[in-house]
Image (cartoon, rainbow, N blue to C red; front, top):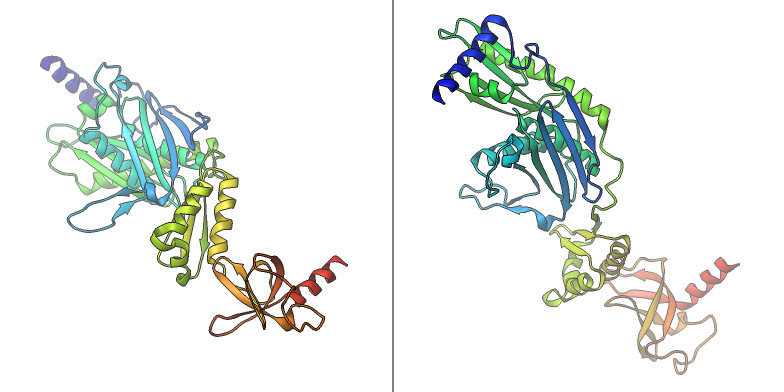
Length: 409
């Protein structure tokens, strides 16, 4: 076995260095045949298949709320969580082998991290979802991590994630003779070329520049001309792959996948956060239980509502709006009478927010008293006339009825 391995390495290297021949007959910087599909799985939030030669990746995208972000626990500090995750799986069957399916190893974690940071640079700055991409390697013969970059990008665009640019990845190999007097760079290396060669120079990026790279070397170092050559070869190949990817899906879909959860954001006054949460979280818990939505509240008053249906979303927005709304002068409200005094009636126009409708504003006729005019629990239309500096609300039933009558005519 050792003799066969040594013969294979010697033969592959000699063919490339002395004859310019690669194992599959390709030219020095030729990319293997490309193929891709998007939307291959009907129920997930986004999906794609990308193939380059015998290397094939199936990528799926799942969108979730901020609560689905991965929590990080670092000794050196840094971000407490991350909202974009790319996981890479390399099962035995992708190389035609039989083996146990277990937890990911160091190689898989490393490949996933490379693909993740290469795509992370093109994610939108403002996007209220947590994102998980899973790249399942269905077949592997070199550069499956680079295929994961290409396929992860296509799956994200299929899900409707508004990426800034299309991103792709490619691997550049190197063959040298014993005294390194001859050096040959090759593009899109096969698994055997990786094994028999001296370098695996992985580069991910867009048309504008590099977003991630990793170099595996069997040499003691690289001269600058080799670095420049590898970067140039990767750039040329990357543009060709991006051109191909954009024939499959030229840009992110205009809307999120219909099965993706919906997240909408509302801005509430900071002093209303406590009212929305309620004592011991009673208010926010009640909204979640009654509507089926999830609600995240930031310290700056930004409220993110997560729902799996339009009905749930609208119900949650309505309930949040009721609790956090402020009285607007000139607006007509339907309120409930909560108290009656000699000088008028108190009307609750918003949850926990009462205003006074003075007896003189109750009717266009003169009223001597409030006896028999209304009772506690009655629902009436009132117009907000003013909110003073102390937050006291002045209401008018007379003005509301006049405006409604005018609108009816």
